Amino acid sequence: MSRPVRIAPSILSADFARLGEEVRDITQAGADFIHVDVMDGHFVPNLTVGPAVVKALRPHSRLPFDVHLMIAPVDSFIPAFAAAGADIITVHAEAGPHLHRSLQLIKSLGKKAGVSLNPGTPAEVVDSVIGDVDLILVMSVNPGFAGQRFIASTLAKISAIRARIDASGRAIDLEVDGGITPETAARVVAAGADVLVAGTASFVGGRAAYPANIRALRPAAS
Image 1 (cartoon, rainbow, N blue to C red):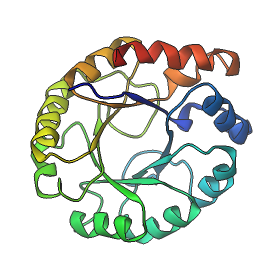
Image 2: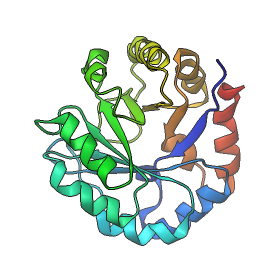
Image 3: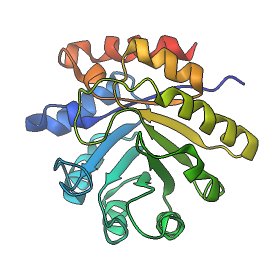
Image 4: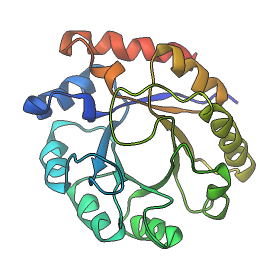
């Protein structure tokens, strides 16, 4: 089945000194989502942004804000990110004691709910919540930093999750994040992904290069 492939530039690789302009520029360049990586220095070894930054960026783009929460415990922060303007909120399977409860909280706030799997998290984790998610995010690097090398062994997991999504009959996005380049994009799309998170590959070269960067990721969609 042919699926439209969407590009979700991660603002982790943007110029933080001009973040609002960067969001506007990458939107105009042809992005489909704005991917916001939220890290707490505890669940992952880095610190990034909070709800105030999401709220400040919200007027700069009409694209869906795809907010990836790499924080634990996660539940107490979900309402703040929902109120700040997130459209999709993704939590890690290990980010709290009750994954189903976290997903239900996101849905109760009128947002799309996603679950993320680290490279070491097995595909089977999604089986108990596949009826509750709108998006499954497969990390193809260990979360925490931009610019890491793609972990090729995650391709088998992407394929296994694609089979689960297809068997469910539900419209669930399969997103991949980490080491996405024009070369790896083709491989993850072939494995079943339909949303590509690309930080470095989207923002390299400055604003004049953004349209070409996004176009270079799209041949995988054809």
